Length: 85
Image (tube, rainbow, N blue to C red; front, side):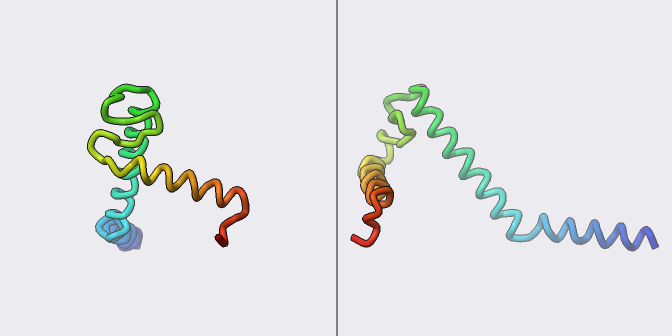
């Protein structure tokens, strides 16, 4: 009886880690690690020619400055209660 319960638990665990949820968890972890690394590189000025102080990749992703400006504008609108404009 214990063997069959143990097999069922192992089968459920194996099925969980072989599912798409596992891939989603791995992708999210990789995304967070990459984002944190870019932010740290920029904030500590480790690679100032590639990342600015906000962690935006200015050397190889030139559209980052535009997106940051748009995000700042939208944040001001949100904090000012002008979301409907």
